[in-house]
Length: 403
Image 1 (cartoon, rainbow, N blue to C red):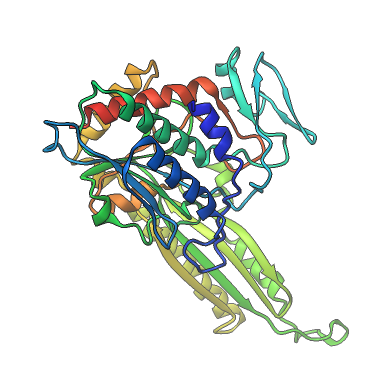
Image 2 (tube, rainbow, N blue to C red; image 1 turned 180 degrees about the vertical axis):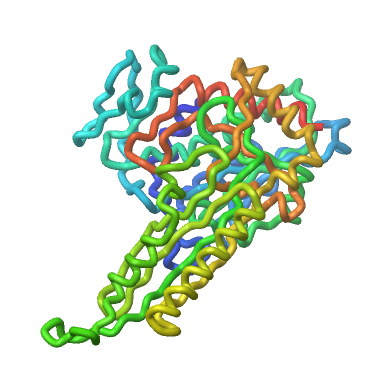
């Protein structure tokens, strides 16, 4: 099975995670893909393959004779897709991109005017959606690439390599991908997540991240007699939002610039709840952002009465840079691997996070590599077939040269 065939098979599984269930995994349907992967891993000859009760799938490629003393190197990708856009009944297709606008279906158009990186792939085959769902390259492309590389490594009788640990995690998209990860059983001295964007990207800096929840307690009175009595929680929540820095949102920031992101609002006049994300690469600025929210809430309570605004803030993950920098060889090997596959390495900061961020703080330094895909979490998602194929070569290089 080619890497493209694997990818097209995997995107047929609906594996959206759900932050509201409180279970592990958050959705049982992730296990369906997990079971299929575990079976494939056994069939291609991996050892110790299993899926645990929390949905983690892992297996191992033993070291070849004479290489048993080499440290174990890990490779990871995640099973789930984003809850933001449907991943059910994905209708993926391969098209030859000749430039210009590419109609996807359902009124959706993939245009280089909106997505300029498309121009790099003129003349290549792209895997796209029909405009009604996401594609699932985040991160089923990473899964397909790891599986294809692992299968090829096992078939190569002349290969010399240390022990390779492979894992596929649930719930990465909702920030829970390593909550129950079996670090000791995995046994890797270092690892790579394959969960990045376009071909060549190498990432070892990510956001410090927190989630915040604001509950606004209003006082509802019949609107006919509400003067000087009603406290409309919806309007009070809007007032709180309006005091956030207008230019510090995802739509106005890039690179190392942090942001506040209000992503969910529910409620009525009596009670309104909003959820937001806090992000910054710089730890000091990250802490200042959280304190800003606390100060804003205290100010609004001073205006509207103590207890009107109730804020909780919870850290999600931290910038893995300080955990990776003591291991520069991981980045240098990744650069070598990209060049060996004909891809120009590009080290960029992640404007998000990966399982590798938390694993790095658990003692397994884990930079992130590209999958080759673009426009994740939306109906305009695509991945060039040559990028899928080159990433298999990148991973094989690392598996054979992970000293």
